[in-house]
Image (tube, rainbow, N blue to C red; front, side, top):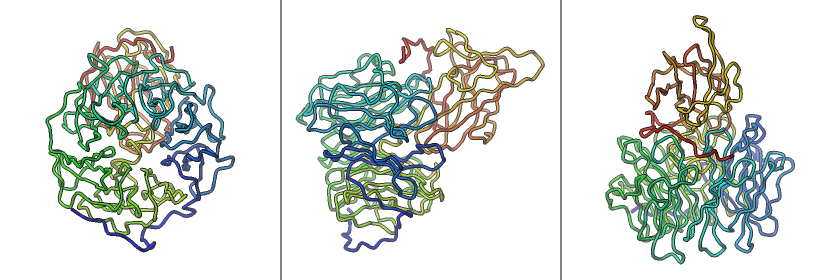
Length: 580
């Protein structure tokens, strides 16, 4: 076991970016997003100050944005999400505002000018909860917001869902008789082409049973019942995550119960073979999947309430140099990325009084760390290239009343980052792999294409066009797309036609190299891979130039998976869109 050394000096080798840190009131984990579309990101953090609830924003140089801070109806201590909810080209910051002393709670969506979209803020049915989760559940390019909410002191709770206009989704609230204290995970758990929602609930006080629920995008049960699994221990605040540890492309649900045990469930709720995971008797924060140098299988990095950081292989064995023992309880999810400029990924530990730590894979401190703060630093932070120099910056909130931006020498590249934000990304999906589905008829620029009914299409509609034989005429489609994290994305379309040739594709003006990937699909459709591109979190413009074939296009898929993911694709019969 490696004992963390106490550091008495404020001196450190890790500098902060110019203009940082900035003074602030304590509150949430920050989110980094380009709010005004000028290509430069802003840093946003909420305040939990009961006397002055507000949300703050700064530019890359630490200068407060004009008109900010923005008042909130209540304080917020949960990590905000950032997304273009209504598909108007402007990113909103989604904050869950609540307080234990109030019997009300709200979802707020803050624009750059401080306004909120029509229908916002939203008053929730319940009071307490966790960070909001954002996803496009029905593929129309407009995002839905999902949030857990519970009574002030626990009890029967809700998962609530709202569309971009602030209207409640038809299945919301989804109510259970247990307490929900953690954010949901959103992923295609059964790889059928639909996104699913999974979450944990437990008996309060924290004794006895726990339960895992899983529903589809429309609120129907993922399996025979909405209850995916019954557990012999509660699962309270640490959120679930969706990861593929079995190596078969199917996501498993990874969870940490309140007895300190890490568990794996498949999409049917069956527990995978018991492994001797470390059992410290204290709950762990969301474990993060990491690729280890020289190993063919991933490992799990996690922090727990008993001062420990563990790095274990998939058999549950602590790797050499682990566990690492801090001087204070650790209540923050780890961020995992290259933090020192070598190819290996390191872990940022955002809280072990009185220091902040970055740890190598052998358990030793990264050069220049720890950083002495002298306070309890509970929070996750976010990784970004704030100043555009190609290095990874750690944007972190401290209990010292400041927001910090630590300038590491790590490279800000998709292949160097495993987890950049709370629950993996700035939408808080909790999914290691990202699958983004989009209906083709939601294009922003249709040109010669038209929308037609087709019972074999996923939404029973698709795009078609008439092309004169032998002309070789090409037709363009335009889409504004949004991704939640810096990753490499493979882009696929579901198409139909005699030859189904692969169209040429550009994203942000860059032409993608042609790919030859193809996959079958029900009812005579096929999937065509357009290319692979590295994209940072945020908005991007994509154009597709198609020749005479394919003659019909049904869906788009952006996925971080290297292999085509839809193992159980089925003919899709919408039971009613979310905005109906």
